[in-house]
Image (tube, rainbow, N blue to C red; front, side):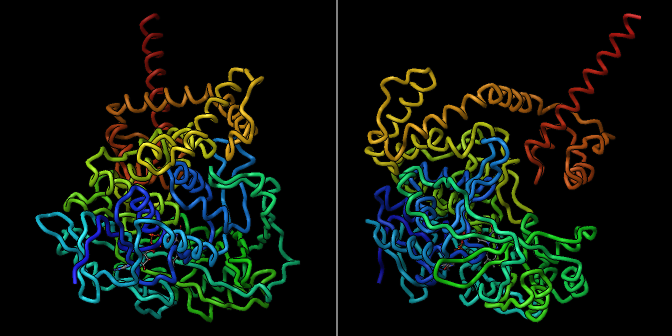
Length: 598
Ligand SMILES: Cc1cc2nc3c(=O)[nH]c(=O)nc-3n(C[C@H](O)[C@H](O)[C@H](O)COP(=O)(O)OP(=O)(O)OC[C@H]3O[C@@H](n4cnc5c(N)ncnc54)[C@H](O)[C@@H]3O)c2cc1C
C-alpha cells in the first residue's frame, strides 16, 4: 500500500510538533510519524520552557504563529522573568511546566489540526530519487510518498543509555531507540553522522524532602505569559503557581562524586562523545572547579498531580547506588527517595555544516533537518528549527521565497547562522552573549520584529494581525505623546494600553544605545580584514573568559574575520578584541605623531 502526503515529518518532539503544525496551518497535507504517540512533545529533562535567551526564542516562535509559548502558558506551574534585576534587554521569561499536561495539550493541538495526520510507527529509511527526498519507508513495509521530508529525530538515532558502567539501547529511558534510520541518512543521503551525549538528573519523591531546610523560590508576583495571544489579566487571575526550592551540594557530596569519577558514564561511550558544556554533569563540575565547595541545586516540581521532583543542577551518569548516596548528602534531601535514576544518553547527530540556512540538506533536495539532529540541545532550540524547517518546506513546495531570519532580527536567525556556518563541536545552546544586536532583539518586542513575517506566510491570521496593527498605531501615538484618543483595551486585546506603555518605555530607554550597538556591529563587519599581530597576547583582554583566550592562543587567527568565524567565539568576544586593537592602533599613531612633532 502506498500513501501520499505533501509533507512527512519524522518525529513528534519539540521540533516535529512545530514543523508539522506549521506545515498543516500553511495548508499542506501533512503526516507526522512518531515512535510513540503517548510521548508527543515529551520533556525528558527539566519540564521547563524558556530561560536565558531561550525565553526570547519562545516569544519569537509565538510571534510567527508557532505553538510552544501558547502551550507553556496553559501548562506552566511557575513563571519567572530571569535577569529581571538587569536591564529589560536581557530579561528572559521562563516557566516550570506540568510535564504531563504539556505533552497532552501539544498532542491535542496536533490531533485537532486540520490537514495533519498522526501515525505511530518507525521510519526505517528515506526514499531518495535523483538526490531528491520523495518519501519514507516505515516498519510495516509501507512506503509513504511526499514532496518533502523533515527529519526531527532528537536523541533517538542509535541512542545508547548509560547508567554508570551499565549501558543499553534506548532513545530515552523506557523508550526504544531508532536503530535503522541512521544507515539510510548516511548511505542514501550521504550525510556524515557523529555522536553527542547528554545527561539528566534523578527524580525524587516530594514527600521525602525536608523543605524547611531549603530556601523557597516562589514564582513572580506579576507573571508574564509567553504568548502574545494570551490575555494577560485573565490569565494571571487563573494561574495557580507552585514554588521551587533551593539547596546546595557540600564537601561530602563532592567527596562521594570525586572518589567515584571512574565509575561514571560521563567519560565513556563509543567515541568519547561531547556533552553540553553549559549543562555539565555534577561529575564534570567537580572535576572542572575543584576549588568550589558547593553548587546550587534547584528543587523543582514536575507537575500539579505528581510528587516527582526534578533536581536541577544534579545531572549525573553515576551508578544508581552512588546517586542515592550523593542525594542523601545534601541538606533537605537526607531522606530523599529516588523515583527515577539520572542517566546519560549518546546518540547520532548530523553536522549542521551539511545543511543550508533554510535547514534543507545540501546533498538532498527537499530533505530538511530540525532540532537535536542538527547538534543542538534544548527544547526551544529544537522547536524553533522545527518551525523554520516546516515553513521552508512549504514555501519551497509553494514556489515562494524561503524564510531566512537575519542575526539582527532574531535569536532564531543567530542560532541557524551559527550552526550552519561554524558547525558544532559540542551540543549547541543559545545565550544572549551570542547576539551582537541583543539590545534590539528583546523578548518584549518579538511581535514587532517578526509578526509581519508570520502573517506573510499565513501563520498569523488576518484577524489577529489587524489587532496587532492597532497596537502598533497605539505605540506610535504614545511615543509621540498623543495619548488623548487611544484605542481601548477591548479594541486592542490581547494587546493592551499598559503593554504599549511598557514597550514605549523600554524602547526609549534603549533608543540611543541601539544606535551605538548597530554602529559597533557595522564597524566589526568592516574591520574583518584587520590583522591580529602574530604574537598578540590575549591575556591582555581581561574580560575574555579563560576558555576563549585558550581558543585564540591555540588557533592564532590572523584577522578579525578569521577570529569571528571560529567555533564558540561570540560577537561580544570579537567586540572586545576589535576595540583593543583599535585602541592600540590609535596609541601607536599618537606616539608617531608626537615623535614627528618633536
Ligand atoms: C536524557 C536527556 C537529557 C537531556 N538533557 C538536556 C539538558 O540538560 N538541557 C537541554 O536543553 N536539553 C536536554 N535534553 C535535550 C532535549 O530533550 C532535546 O533538546 C529536545 O527534546 C530535542 O527536541 P527534538 O524535537 O529535536 O527531539 P526529541 O524531543 O528527542 O523528539 C524526537 C522524536 O522523534 C521520534 N523519532 C525518532 N526516530 C524516529 C523514527 N525513526 N521514526 C519515527 N519517529 C522517530 C521520537 O519518537 C520523538 O517523538 C535532554 C534529553 C535527554 C533525552
